[in-house]
Length: 265
Ligand code: GLU
Image 1 (spheres, rainbow, N blue to C red):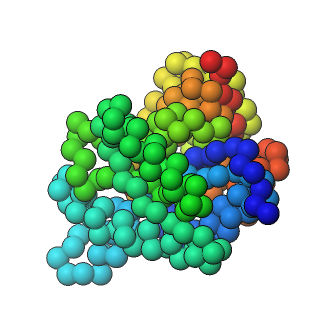
Image 2: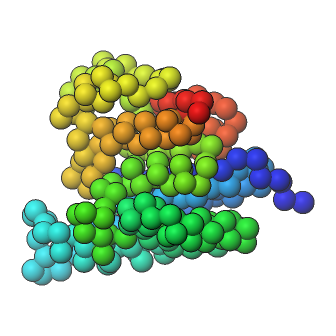
Image 3: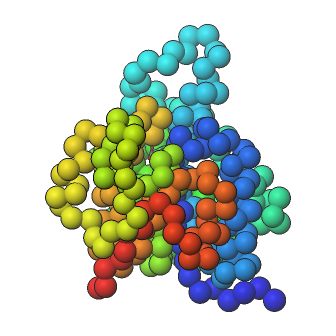
């Protein structure tokens, strides 16, 4: 008998993780998605980045394709190339567990408009009822500046709010939030927990919080996402995505990375 659902989590994987971890890492994550559902009664809605970064890798050996700065149209076209490649990896990973994957692409307007949000919520509920894992990304190919989330950290926090998730897990390439930038200060200490994301903390991030070459979201966008989540009662975990069994470890209550508590509403 399948375990009764007790919690809903949103898990977001960043571009660096997708490109450096590749199919093996995605397969390991999907195996954990299966364990979360079967053993812990946790259902997962997955938010993936990495479409553009995957397409850049895919296109890079073609003549006429350069790795320089890109126009919006180029990024949108790249997202359309990379999205099916990324989705294939999730589909294969879930199929290996006897589970299904579904693709849902969103723009900011889809969650801002009440009718469209309701349609989105109904679709997700139906997929989960059929035990199919929704794999979300921003609909980069059509989203213009005005209707963008901007980065998937923000998207995942808004999704967590609209689907009344209990936790938001952000899988990234650093261990969590540090007291200072670990890239420039090797003795920087990890912050294991935060009661809330204060405006002062956001301000203190400055330039060190900016995104990387592959993904748009650096630590600043993760904290902003954690703030939205926290203000809506959702607990956020910022963790290193390629730590072994990271999701099942969190389900068992082990401490990893930084946890930002949800505030009571
Ligand atoms: N949606 C973008 C992609 O799939 C990534 C956005 C982000 O870096 O958060 O390439």
